[in-house]
Length: 182
Image (cartoon, rainbow, N blue to C red; front, top):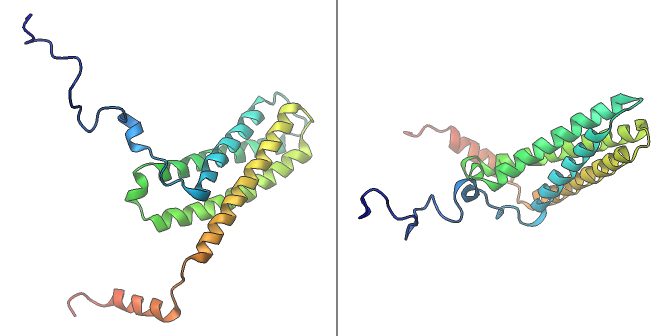
């Protein structure tokens, strides 16, 4: 047993592809697709999380409807931002149609930004002037501005894309509906 039959070396000279410095979950996570305006996704995630945390610290309220609505919206915004960020930063993006991911991101960002703004305004009208409520409102407003800015960048990018002309779309449809053996 002293000659090494039982115990192997503790380090490997050439670790396999699944081992090494970037192994486990880190090997599947990349920020390369978050170039340009997509960095707003991280800002949206952080601001919505901060708004949710500040709202959760509120211990009492007199008009709680605005607080509860803000709680639901801020938590939903955080989870939707996390979902979109996971899709962009993992191999999931390669397995789905990028056009569908961008379209989903476009509408989710628009809807979340508008609803987050409405929830922040309602909460601002019904809060009890505590510091945590004011911080939650500020983070909520900043998050809604980040969502709207992200949406405006996506809208500008979408307008720059060339749109197919009417005749090209009809030709494509005819091509797709023809039988393969004709």
